[in-house]
View 1 (spheres, rainbow, N blue to C red):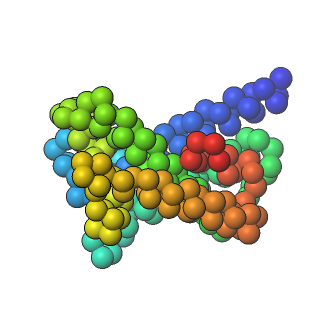
View 2: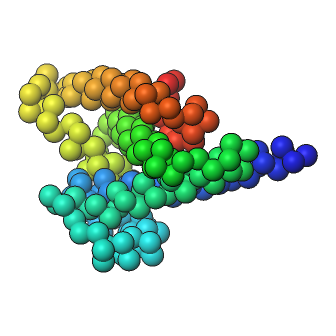
Length: 202
């Protein structure tokens, strides 16, 4: 019975933790892409993250136009999730410095997964609803543009077909594999690695 409650505790903490981490990382990506903050979804993300993000911004300034406070908050969310789930699962208290490194790896893996899945969704809807003005699709296009634009400049569309997503998928898959190898080098336990999102199938 104790093991059952432990599993439930890990499930709840991991689920709530990864969902909030997703929102925080979305806040960072919104700023990175210069997305429309008047979009209703953007406004929702801002409202959810502001209570923790605004105090951090008072002590952590931006750097090269990047919202460093959002990155620090994401690392802290991942750290708390790792330490809490480790205790609930019976692993004891992980070394905080190691856990912080694992949190960084997990955050990068989550960003890769979000962009990968976002690309899939964007491609599907470009075929079934190419001119949709839905706020979610409009925001998704804005968020993905920084990842596609550099490749599009090197490899222009073939007529009306934009092949840049193919190369984005390749690069994301390679990055995910490299990150997995780095996680092994950092002695990141499989249990901890599984707490974060990854490219489907990896």
